Image (tube, rainbow, N blue to C red; front, side, top):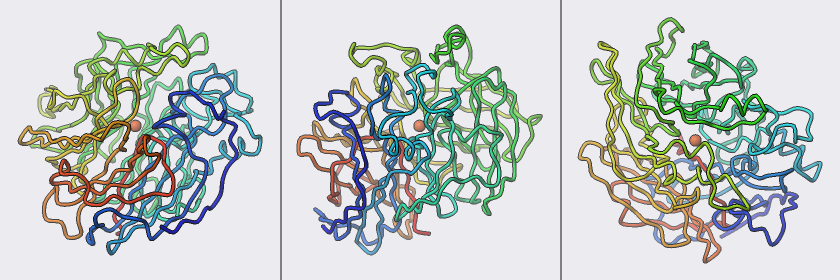
Length: 486
Ligand SMILES: [Fe+2]
């Protein structure tokens, strides 16, 4: 392996740190590398062409009061494949907050588990206000640029997807009504459009917008909601965009005291807003479903009179309201997939009758699913989901779900080995939905090393076709994407 160290950044984290999200699977790294001629066990497929990107939440400084992994700074990992070879790069996203804290040598913003008045900085971001816009939640690629997003609504930070060179903030000439962009904007590969939603703390509306293939804002709509809501994900079909108003939202009494605590309203239905992609607020169709909170959706498509939506139903959404099994570092119980009891679920919205039908599609806990991106907004058969580690937010397995056959295939990682959200990369000239590869970054804590695994998407439980060494063990994180070279 050939490695060039690009930069190492300041950190004041203690050597004997014992925070569960700054050690083990979540041990942060503060050095940026470029690496090529990577050591490989097995063989990198010659027909794998494109870039796999992952965003990781990286602790840099000790918090003002309390650290939460969702506020770690964005470090993006990029591995680019072509001609049977791969090269790797990792970079911090140079957000305004990251740069200011590097200059100060300490944390300046209050964490999401703190009262906003703890912040030292004079201004902040996010739907709850006074946060650091960490840009550390998702990474997608639109118009040849990687965009890093933040789940509490922040700017979209642009990078070159291969070199991770900083390209500053994407504004598209607008300020999104001052709201930033929520966690998961979506790219429709069939039209080149980017769909997004956004919200402010006390908004009664959710903002919904479309950026066209030329990078221009073509639609922006104020969608009237039942009250201030903070949905995490969205979906789309050929003609419809699907937003949701979850049954879990900020507790009114806590909000009055300046805190942000979620309460599950078990008698309040989950509501879905279906809006024509370029429609108006008057054209929104509302559908009601069983109460829950949705973290992630898988995909949606049209089927006659119905819109079909796949995602994850939390059978224990109340866990987001609190709960702790670690008195020294409380409040993390909600982060485990097992704790929220998330299972794959299908909703069907009948546009003729206005009725919703819904049913689980799996009895097994999983979340963070990916599909073959060529099927986004179109009918899909397969999803590739992450399996969670009991008691913490980390992934130790992959599940391939055949929704037509109702079968599941599992790859379990060895103890102490953690996987990432695993996107599907279609093989060059692929001929079937699962004709391609799954990619996952692997953090092997016992052996203190990281690899990128390439798996056959048609039979991932057979294990990796290639294990590619990385320069340093990387941290766990949340979201990732596959960007074909085209
Ligand atoms: Fe997410």
